[in-house]
Amino acid sequence: MYRSLLKPLLDRLLALFRHAGIVAAPNCDGIDHPHPGWRTFHDSSKAGGKDGALFTMLKFRSMSVATPHIPSAQAAAVHITPFGRIIRRTSIDELPQIFNILRGDMSIVGPRPPLPAQTELCELRTQSGAIRCAPGLTGLAQINAYDGMPEREVAVWDQRYAQKITLLRDIGIVLEPFHISASIRPRY
Image (cartoon, rainbow, N blue to C red; front, side, top):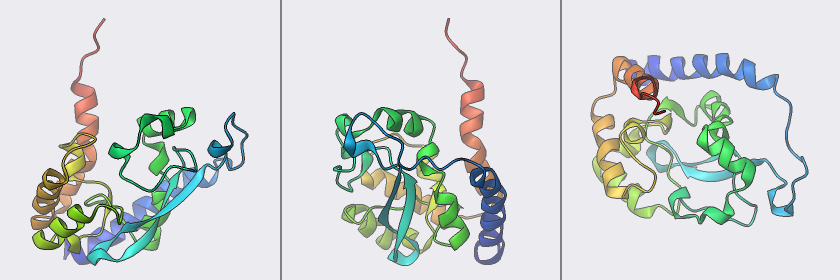
């Protein structure tokens, strides 16, 4: 019942609540930058959704326009714009995905949506059944992962999530980054 009814409802309610803060933000599209490839702030790309269906995933552009749609771990650092470094470090580049949640393309918690170029990850998710989950803003793999983690390892975490989706687990996944940052003591 949680997975099929309550989870999608909670996703949309929480996204709608967060959407109220985004609507008031000014539109940054078209701000001039020193490099013409850095001009566009909004980006969208096709990504793998529930049951492998492709959908348009929204993001703020963090890479130059000429950068191909490849996993970020494979992109050379030179493609990331100066502004992009800031929004990636803070995950602000993913805020527009709240609209994907409102449309029902994504969930707050679930396996991250793969790019079509990530064929091995898509195949592994199909074999494990994780492909049946709605993709999420964050997931079990993300709180246990690092950028550039092998796709086989990501798929194992995605499978573990898909096998046991509960409200308490989703809450734990959402709150985990706060626990980690609160437990790290600053070094002086």
